[in-house]
Image 1 (cartoon, rainbow, N blue to C red):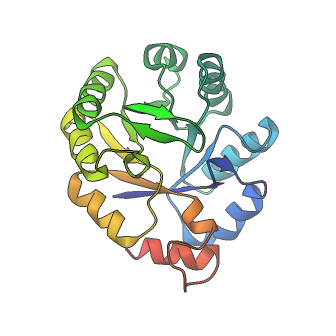
Image 2 (cartoon, one colour):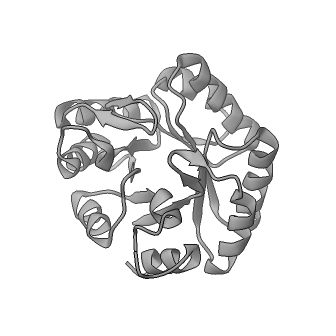
Length: 221
């Protein structure tokens, strides 16, 4: 699976994201992302440039919940020139905004709720959304598996895998805070996972140390 390092904590881009990106540059991370809130547009522009300069794919994840804010975030992704846009639920409108840009889109299947975002919806809904989104032209889906409020995270992951079939990439975001969860997601069919908060609060590897040490543990998983 691909590991997408998110420069985020509690669903916001961290204020010192540029310094942190420089700190972790020696690790040669291939996938790096951030959220659409937490820092200003100029910082996001600089961050996107630096991620690409380090040879990594860039990801912008939408945590906005209103329709207007989701559209604005899609336009922001175009302006920034990110490689992938994650999240949001306005699928047809977002695809129209991204058309011709080459930006891959991975919306949230199910029903995202609140901030930090949680997930409602059963496996049938997740599978149906995932299949519909890929058929509309999405590159895959961004599943908040371990943010599910009532459903089993791995059942949702397997459902999203069925929906994406062989045509869509399945990214699992939120709450991935242990080797056991990474391995479980891989077994359930995920193609990639994101980690942000668990790196910055040290919960992924409580005895490992700071950001660099946390990331080294994740990369060895």
